[in-house]
Length: 432
Image (cartoon, rainbow, N blue to C red; front, top):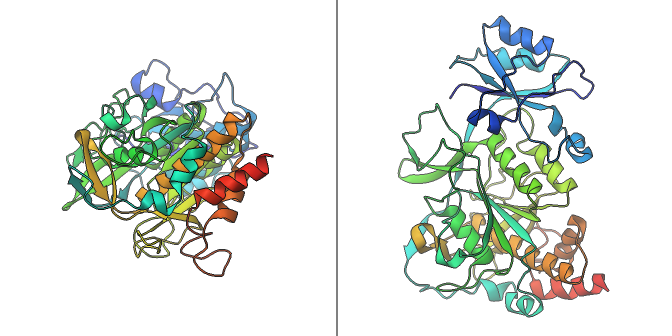
C-alpha cells in the first residue's frame, strides 16, 4: 500500500485548504486532487522528495463540520496518501510531529486482534445457562427490543444471509482496504470498499447472533427486535494455525464515525488493540460518538493480564469482561481496561459463517450480551417516549450489577455481573 500518514493539525492553525476530499471517496474517484496541506508540513514531505495527495480522514455528517465534530477535532485530521510506494525515513514522523502546526502525526498501520477458537456444531449440546445468569427472561417480559434502536456491530462483517439474522440488518458498511499490502495470508475481499460486508470467518456473525438472533436453532438474541448495522472494519488472516483479525486502526475509526452518523444508538466492538505510539487508538472519534449519546461497548481482551486494549481502555467506553456458567470471572479476561461489568463468555452458542453455528469463549462473546442488554434498556425507555443518556446507562449498570465481593468495584469484574432484573426495576424507578 502506498504509505498513508495521519496528521492532526493544531486547533489554532490557519492557511489550511479545507477543500480536501474524504479519503474513502478519493480511493474510488481521484478526480479531485489536492497536493498541499500547509507550508510547514508540505516542506518536510517535499524535502524527502515525496509527492502526495491530501484527503480528509473523516466525512462531515452534514454540509459542514458540526460543533461536536469540531470539539472532537475530527475536522483537523487529514490522511496524506503518498503517490508512490516510498520508504519512510525513520525520522520523518518525528520531524513532522515537532512542527508547531501539528498536534499528532503517525503512519497508518495494520494491527491484529485475536479471535476466540470456534467449534462449529449443528446443535447446542451444552446447556446454555447464559441468559438465566443475567435474568434475561425477566427483561424480555418488559420488552424484546425496539426496531428503532440500532446496534452497530463493528467486526469482520456479518453472514448477511444467515437465517438467524434475516430481516435484522438495516445498514451495511465496509471499511476494509488493504490495497498494495501483501494480502496472501488474508481471507476474502480486502480491497473493495464497495463490496458487501460479508463475514468469511464468523466472528462478527457470532457476535450479531448473541445480540439479535431469531432463535431458530439457538437461543433467541438478547434484544431480538432491535436492528443490526453490519460494519466490516476487520479482515481475517492466518497467523500460524490461528485466525486473527487485522485492519488499519484509522479505517476502524472511519467505521465508528460512519456508524454514528448513520444513526447507531449503540456500537459493539468485540475487538481490542494495544497502544504502541502516538495518540491513544480511537480516542478522537470515540469522544465524538459519546458526545452524540452513542453508547460504546467493547471487549476487555482475552490474555488474562493487566494489558490495556483499546477502545475498551478509553474513558466512557463500557469495557466488558467474561464469566463462566457459574458467574465466576474467567481466567482469560484481561483487566487492564477499567472493566465496567462482566457477562457470560464461556461456551456461547451462536450463529456463525456460511449459515452455520458454533461455540466460542471470550470477552468477544461477553460484550454483545451487555450491548444487547443496553439495547433492551434503551428500547423500554423509548417506548415510553424517553431517551436514556450514557450517564443513565452507566448509573443503572453500576448500581444493579451483582457484586462478586464486598467492594463497590472489583479490578477483574468491574461493578459486577450484569443483572437485568434489577436493572429494569431501577430503570422503571428513574423513569417515573
